[in-house]
Amino acid sequence: MNKPSKRLVQAMLILIIAALAFFAIRPRPLPVETGKVVTGPLHETVEAEGETRAHDRYTVAAPVAGRLMRIKLYDGDRVTAGQVVAVMRPTPLDDRERDAAAARVSAAEALLQAAGDQVAHDRAELDQTRRERIRTGQLAGQGIATPQAMELAATAEQLAANNLTASEHRARAANARMKEAEAALLAADPRQAGGGRIVTLRAPRSGPVLRVLEKSERIVTAGTPLLLIGDPQKLEVVVDVLSSDAVKIRPGAEVVLDEWGGTPPLKGRVRVVEPYAFTKISALGIEEQRVNIIADFIDPPSRLGDGYRVMAKIVIWSKDGVVKIPISALFRLGEQWCTFVVDQGKAIRRTVKVGHRNRDEAEILDGPGAGDTVVLHPSNLLDDGMKVRAQ
Image (tube, rainbow, N blue to C red; front, side):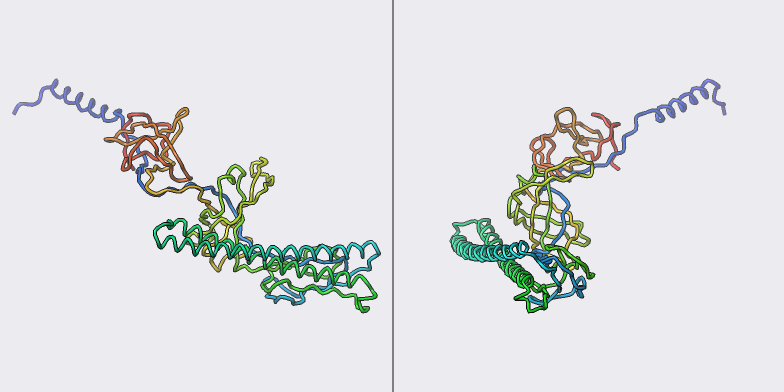
C-alpha cells in the first residue's frame, strides 16, 4: 500500500486550517429577542400614582379656643351620628370674640341653607337623568338608540345618584357645624351657659374614626382638627396628573387600578376633573402644574382603606381591531420611527408610521403587517440586513 506523499499531506493540512479559520472568522448571527405584530384592542392611557380616600370625610374641629379634654376614642372605633366624641372647656371670650362667634353661627346657617339647596338641585337632576335613562331604554328596545347611548344614560344616572348622596352628606355636616357654632356661642356667654362652660363635640355622621388627630388633653385654638370620621367602605381615588394630560380626560372615562397589593386589577370611572391646577415639585426638582382626577370604584375590594397607594391608568382612547406593535420594538432614526423586521434570518429595517400608543404597545398606521416578527430592544450592534438568531 502506497503511503500518501508529503505534498498531499501538506495540502490536506492547509485545507483543514483554512476551513477552521473560515468558520472562526465568519459572521455569526446576532442573538435577538423577538415579538409579533398582532391585531387586537388598544387603549391609550394616562398613567399616574394615586391614593384612595373616603368618599365623604368629616373633620371634627375645635369650635372655640380652650382646653381639650382627653379623647377616649381610638383609630377604627365606630361612632354614631350625634355621639359625643370630644369635650372642651372654652376660654373666656371678650366682646369682639363673642361677636366673631355669632358671625360664625350666621355663616354656618348660610352654609346649611346652601347645602339644602344643593340637595334639592341634585335630587331634581337625578330625577331628570332617571327619566332620560328610561326613555333611552325604550328607544334602545325599538332599535333607535345604540347600546352605547344606553350605557351613557345609565352612567349619568349613577353619577347623579352619587352627587345626591354626597350633597346629603354635606348637608348633614353643615348642620353639625351649625350646632357646634351655636354651642360655642352659648358657652362663650356665661349668662346662658348655666355656669358649666362645657362644649361637647358630636359626630356629624355614623362611621368609623379614621384618625384621632389630638389624643391628649391640651390647650387648642379654634379650628384645630381633632379627629377624622369617614367610611372606608365607600372609597374614591384621587390621581394627580399633568395639566397637559388632564385636558384629554373626560368624566365617565374608564380607569384601571393596579399595584394595589392584590389581583386582579380593579376598575373605576372618572367622576370629576377638578377645574383648577396646583403646583407640585417633581422628584427631579421640577415645578409641574398638576390637576386632581377623582374616580369612583366600580368594584372596590374590602381590603383597601383610606390613604392607600394605587397605580391608575385612565383610558383616553380605545379601539378594537388595531394593528399594533410592541413599543420596545420601536426606535427613532432622525424624525422617523423605525423597527427591524426579521425576514429569512435577517433583520430588515422598516419605517413605521405610529398612531396612538401606550406604555406597552403602539398602533401601526403604515409599516409591518399583522403576523410579522420584529426585534425587541434592538441594540447598537444591529444593522440593516444583518443575520440574526431568535433566542
